[in-house]
Amino acid sequence: MSEGKIQPKDETDDQFLRTQYAFVHMLTEHLVDCRRVFNGDLDAMLVLAILGQNHLKVLMTGETDGDTRSQCLRMTASRIADVTEMSRQTVRRKLQDLEKQGWVEQRDDASWSLAGPPDDTQAGRDLLELSNRGLARATRLQDDLNRILGVRNNR
Image (tube, rainbow, N blue to C red; front, side, top):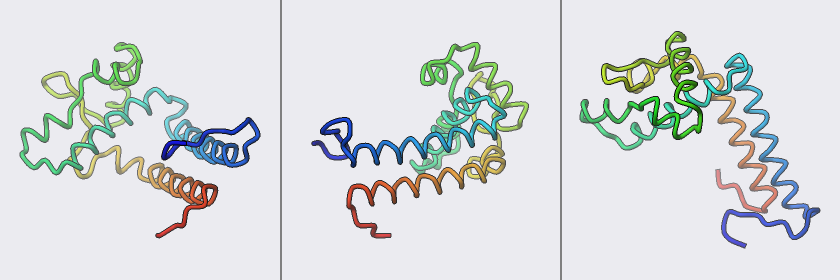
């Protein structure tokens, strides 16, 4: 068995079933929460999540040069469509909806980024409670998996 993967010995393997349940429980609970916050529009949530993921990646690199940082924080609708496997038309429509919410903005070069200063975006402020609930779910999943797999928690 490779590190980080659980292989069922058979369909009733208890560790596999408990691991799958913990993961599916966390995922469905979070998706239901996201669906509620986004008024049923999981496509818009996914588009924003892709932009947000890119945004966080740039912030984690510690890029401080203003021009380089600003360019890295941007994504085109085509790139988002490629990543999400949505049509470009759907992505453009979702970006326009998110723009109306004040969460994203389109740049002069037709790329998109989160609206607001890089370290304090409007979407980040508006979705803080959802983010905190998601992080609490991820922590619970980690604790559940540690318990199922017999890993000691060093927190």
